[in-house]
Length: 259
Image (cartoon, rainbow, N blue to C red):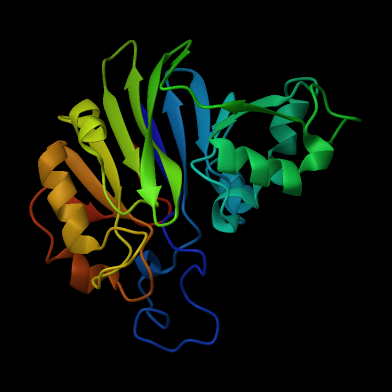
């Protein structure tokens, strides 16, 4: 299994426009964060989880060869507005619609923004086509299984995900944009080879875990490696990373983890 961290920041990204805080003016490339989205390879099956505004840039940089399946954790702008650039992957399918699995809120937002692309086949070559589908609790693919969990994100719910690769048995847990990880999700994720957890900032927040909460969730899951994601500019990489417990690190844009 291989996970590409295409973006690790919040809806504003980092640097933040017009801000001269130490993180925003940092020369450390790990302090430059696109909006949060990841790409997952299970065997020969490629899954795009969310599509931020910088998706096209990162797809080119990492030479992502194809997308077989899209999962939208929710419909917030920083997770959905790069979807139009998936059109190239529709071309590779001879215009056949990409299946997009999400929850009710994600589907409603997708239909309102990308209504022109909700069809079984692209209108003309070069256009996108999306087939919205509700994410089931267990989704079987040719290369493994994806478990999904409803998770609290303030006033509404997002999707938490656990991927299990069939050939190797490797497990990847992904919980972003959430204020907690529920017990059933912790149970399914426990002992994962890699866990990625929402960790907005140091101070508490109404709809995201802060760093202390994410570390507590990491301890409960007990993954071999844990990376924190979706950080604001309050979090400087070098000074924060060294304070984290063993096995827990800050993620950063363009990190690739293979296991």
